Length: 83
Image (tube, rainbow, N blue to C red; front, side, top):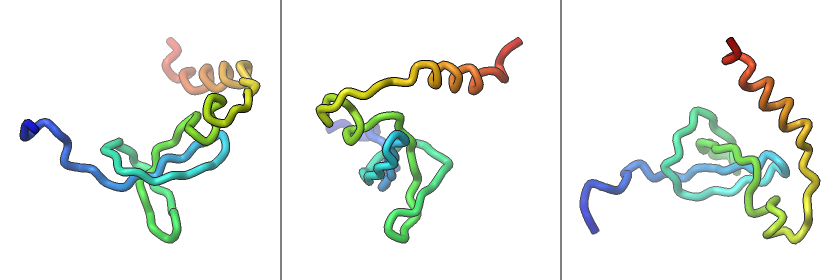
């Protein structure tokens, strides 16, 4: 293994699925400014739109996607960049 090419800042990070509020811990180098309390311990949190607990392929259920709501969220999020 070559030295100096792998990140050194691996730490436990909480990943939170925003569609069903599922939280799981794993080691990661993902940067985040937010934290979440899991079992009395604060971890950095990365928010996900979809994960293994809500993806139709893994759950076997089809999910109706609210495209109108997604478009409105997108427009609101990027309205500040409008000229």
